[in-house]
Amino acid sequence: MRKVLSGLFTLTIMVLATLSGQQASAAEVNVYSAREENLIKPLLDRFSDETGIRVNLITAGADELTTRMELEGANSPADVLLTVDVGRLWRAKEADLLQSVDSDVLMRQVPSQYRDSDNQWFAASLRSRVIVYDKERVDPSELSTYEALADPKWRGDICVRSSSNIYNQSLVASLVSHNGLDDTQQWAQSLVENFARSPQGGDRDQIAAVAIGQCQLALVNTYYFAGMINSTMDDQREQASRVAVFWPNQEGRGAHINISGAAVARHAPNRQEAVQLMEYLVSDEAQEWYAETNNEYPVREGVPVSDTLASWGAFKADNLALEQLGIHNAEAVRLMDRAGWR
Picture 1 (cartoon, rainbow, N blue to C red):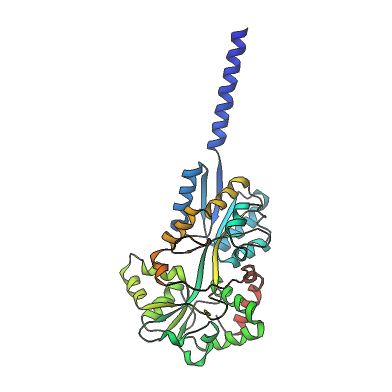
Picture 2 (cartoon, rainbow, N blue to C red):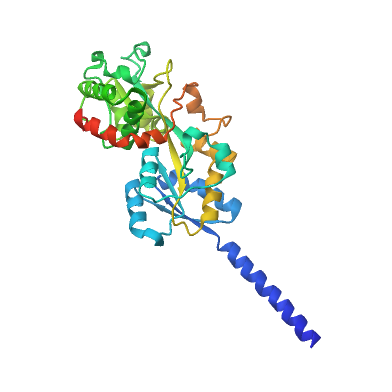
């Protein structure tokens, strides 16, 4: 009998160990990402290698992902939403698709202006929407602020994306927050009069337009320009070489800042793993990867940036709480429509 009990005890221990191992190996996190796979998967693979947590990655457009989460409802497998621009994170929060996160790591590592006041989303990396100019035709001493782009001296000289683009909406929302609705409406109307062409294409297309002389100035996100500088395509590197960055509003509030960010989905089935992934995104390793590989600015101070970003020099960043960009998004869209910014 003693041998039988001993055997049963040993068998029980083996079964429990096997189950424990199966549970450990089954740890996973489902990520809905609006970022291109090549811009995020290598980092997620590192997370898996370090933690043993498998990452199931689904990539699609930001609006497509949030619509999918709404349709899936409580049965959604989404654990983490990764997307670009705080405007999209704000919309996801307003649609009740996110949940608050209580994490000392995230609270300590992410400055307050780069996270939601209810802790429903957190920045993973930063970018600025800046002015780029034709190095041969524009003296940078002529440039100063976003507001000054409305000056008639730039009539027919500015290229920019459509008003349907979230990056432009957020920039205009920041102006509404700083300057008020009426002043921003007047600014937008004057800016439209300075357009060199009807808004079209993406940020890289605006840079290319400056390079080939269709316009002298453009509004673009920094990481697009950095991507062209480091492109494997000869034509993109050539175009980028003709253009330079100007940091607006350096004598005042600073250059407009936006983010790529992460949030835990409201019905996350793997909440603990989701928070663990978000904490990893603000770790030293991940922040250095964002800076070096994606040419994005780290959320945390003291993390070195890439050589390309360093070559543009230090700049003063607007410290506006980014949730203001979501709060004023609808107003920004309406005033852009009224101004004829299509």
